[in-house]
Image (cartoon, rainbow, N blue to C red; front, top):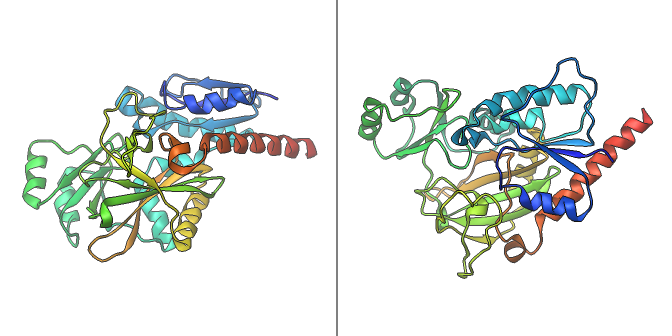
Length: 324
């Protein structure tokens, strides 16, 4: 078997994935999408599959150049018939909160009332018809980056006057109603191959927007978790978690979202609006770091399922090529 190629820029996030690949004896190589090149005229690259793990939050780590480059490279690989996990279409949605909400609108899936802006001067006009508090979210964020909450228009005007509004690397942002979470939690659902994998409730104060599942510290019973992925560069934030299976209609909406956005491996977050009980979906995430200490939280190791899926996709692609 030709090696799997895992494209990532963070030194620690995907160690559990590499461990599972090594346990199964599956050859793999890694590439850094923030320091990379390819030749337009090259023949079909030699790999079993390509797994895109590029993070939109790489700009926080000096890797802004990897984001738009990756879109080009994924299209190049797909042109050559490479099986790309979380390919071009998935990464287009990963890198645009505006497109995520447009897809929800087209599918009839509810989301927080939002406006799209490209300059701080437009925030005040964009708030018409929105209830305060509001949040301003950079279109390309990741790990909660680029999100600011404002309780009043006066706070917005002051931030604009002090040049404190950051619209992110594509100078586009959402102006969105802040949703008070019923029960004090949001729900994150992970999917694999377009299907439900598991769900968790993440308990939050509502003031923190960094809900990376691997940063969670405890179960709701107070058991400390072994954080095994993206937490090495993040402080413990006191979040608590519990396993949860959403209602069937919610699972259907989530599976529809990931299938329509081309996401092979990803997480969707939703919230129940405490003001009226509406279920609102607000984040489509193609870079899933599975929950910390997963066996203790959800009862199984999702990285094992992920590696099984990758292996199946590589075999399926090889069989298709052989038939042709």
